[in-house]
Length: 204
Image 1 (tube, rainbow, N blue to C red):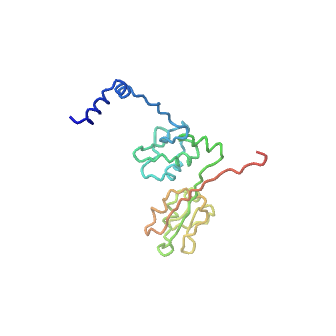
Image 2 (cartoon, rainbow, N blue to C red):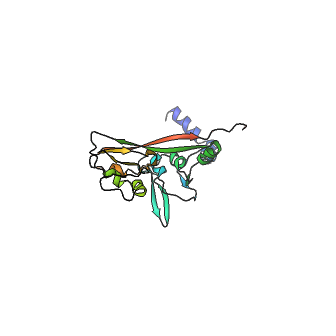
Image 3 (cartoon, one colour):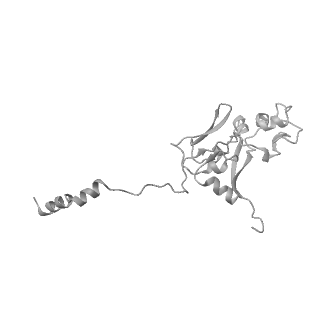
């Protein structure tokens, strides 16, 4: 047996080393206050706005499901990357994660959604399917004909002189019903996500 091996055996056999090895203690793990865990419900009522799903960059990480008499956001932890965008996007404070909500309230920040309706004039035939399928249009003008014509100025879009004309893009909810109903794939709904901070009042 070589001298080096004997030295190692003697070193590992020391009582002090054995005690340190068998009874080693580490400092307890403490979750930092800034840590973003998986989003959790706050108990507030979900209004099915779906902003959480729109903001989520991870496919399949969150879905809003019907539960009893209402709706609840369901987090799929195998897909969630804990970015917290769903927490920030929810207008009703239904979700929480770490200090996100507290920071937003303190700094007066929020995420705002808007939608852009893009119509490819080369593909569009002016059939009006998008106009008649739009749920907002149906509420604004229950008498809208099959061709998408309407004299009501409160609709999002309508057919005028054979073309689809967007009147109130700001009323779009991003449901993409028009996009799905178009037989030619001529319409696309793009979501715009913008950060907003309340202006600081003078004297504060």
